[in-house]
Image (cartoon, rainbow, N blue to C red):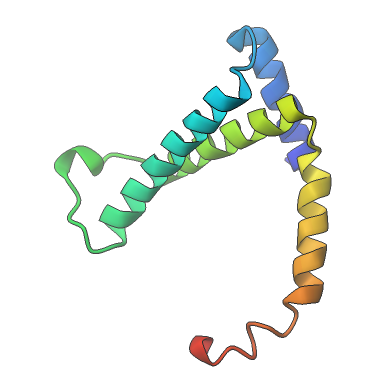
Amino acid sequence: MDIQNAQKEVDNWIKTHGVRYFNELTNMAQLTEEVGEVARIIARRYGEQSEKESDKDKDLGEELADVMFVVLCLANQTGVDLQAAFNERMYKKGKRDHDRHHNNEKLK
């Protein structure tokens, strides 16, 4: 599924099940919370913190999908065509960073 269709699917879900979008500030807080859940899994599973027993059943993919859902909500309610924005970002990164990482001594 492309981003444009994902935005439509989220919008349809909100209209069918969610009653309405939370306001932008609430969704920003929700996004922060979801990113925090991703950070907790990464820090404990791949970082140096020990993983608590209660964290072992957490699904990283599910938490990343939660982040995507809220990002798509924010894009919808603020009128952002995330597909176009992403395509433009990748184009700019391709031009700007074409050789940047290959020439970075820290990455060799």
